[in-house]
Image (cartoon, rainbow, N blue to C red; front, side, top):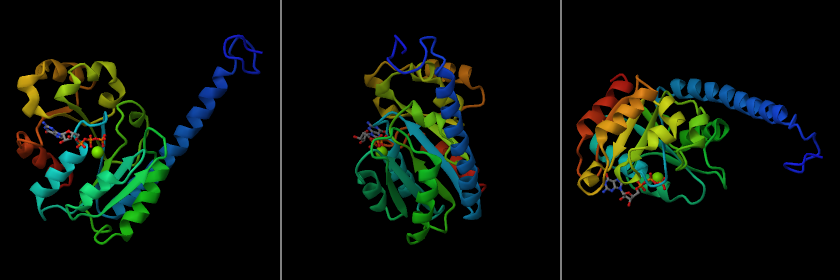
Length: 236
Ligand SMILES: Nc1nc2c(ncn2[C@@H]2O[C@H](COP(=O)(O)OP(=O)(O)OP(=O)(O)O)[C@@H](O)[C@H]2O)c(=O)[nH]1
Ligand SMILES: [Mg+2]
């Protein structure tokens, strides 16, 4: 009996290697499914963006404003991920684009198998099989989603001004694995201590390739650059 955790294995924690093996094989299965998803999305003619952030950083609001701003210039579809409720999908549906809500029933991240199901459901929605751009809004969490490839082509991480500038240093994986870092809610900069250049420098230290984009969905500041980015990643 292990003295530390009470399991049946030896006290030297030789069980640790088994835990690692199981974890690695789960991740390998996820990665294989993610590759299938990527091929599926490409066959649909679309590019997928996986959005990662803490709860409430402004992911759904950014999507709402983006759909309004793009009009008909890009065909957008959305897969929403939440632990419970279809509230985010309802907000997106109100904007008139195809959307599917995935609820994880407790899991703190989406995985590639869920996205596989989501893609098949989305294709049954009106317009869901004719997309330029597929947004996947991950479960609000800056930690676990960073480990799971969903089959996206681009990953973006958001940190909103009220959360503070130390998030890249504290939660590095999301920033290392992303191509774009959005500093959201910049309309709140006058009220919070958020040195943008410091946050940017810390993120770039982790990932020199990262594109950094401050913006506000409320004021529209930074939207021109954001819409240009979307057009660029779609190859339009
Ligand atoms: N001031 C300000 N508030 C914003 C901005 N964007 C979003 N909000 C507010 O932030 C709150 C959370 O926004 P959501 O878009 O729901 O955030 P989310 O990241 O989708 O949240 P989860 O899906 O729960 O993780 C709402 O009250 C929004 O109105 C912004 O640019 N400026
Ligand atoms: Mg949301």
